[in-house]
Image 1 (cartoon, rainbow, N blue to C red):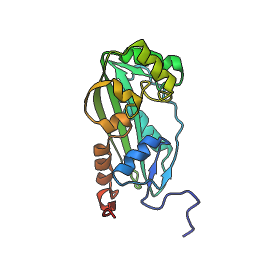
Image 2 (cartoon, rainbow, N blue to C red):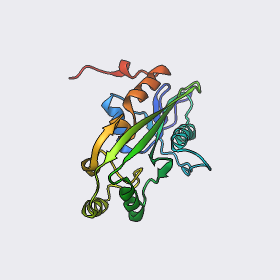
Image 3 (cartoon, rainbow, N blue to C red):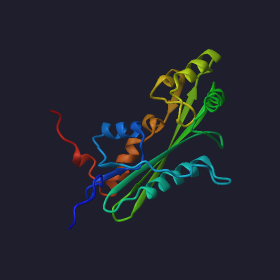
Image 4 (cartoon, helix red, strand yellow):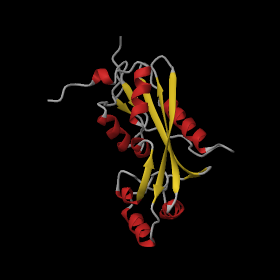
Amino acid sequence: MSPAPPGAPSPGGLVLASASPRRRALLAQIGIEPATIIATDIDEAPLRDERPRQLALRLAIEKGRAANTANAFVLSADTVVACGRRCLPKAETRDEAAACLRRLSGRSHDVLTAVAVIAPDGRCASRLVETRVTFKRLSETEVAAYLESGEWRGKAGGYAIQGLAAAFVSDLSGSYSAVVGLPLHETANLLEGLGYPVVRGWRPAP
């Protein structure tokens, strides 16, 4: 058998189809270190009449398929922030982030994170996790200060709950880790269900 090319995952290893440092840190929290990181580049625009839940699930699965590597498990995820049926963007400009913050101010919204796992034999399993988040009413001073921080850049809904925006959250019902970017309970269950040794890979603390 010829050796695997440099950077290729070992047979049965895990590929994380995301360059997000937050998702990698969340996996480390439950003792998982991906063998390979693959940053996928797909069109994330919603399809016509596509609802936020459908969008999150479709993108998570498409990211996994785009990164699919023979003989490895592939883990992928996508997070969508929705106000009703409206999907908020992954803010790339200050104006986009400002519009998101003002829309979220003083109201509740849904954070929808879908996770998908593709097994080495091609089986695919996915889950959608919905978390309800409520923001306090934001003053213009708070909005301006958060925009100045730059923390919003590339974040769904224009904020990062694990950072400064935690000060804006008055209530959360559901999975905190899903809002950060990866629902750990559901991720572990999907991986174990398809044969990846999550718990069996744990080691005693030194």
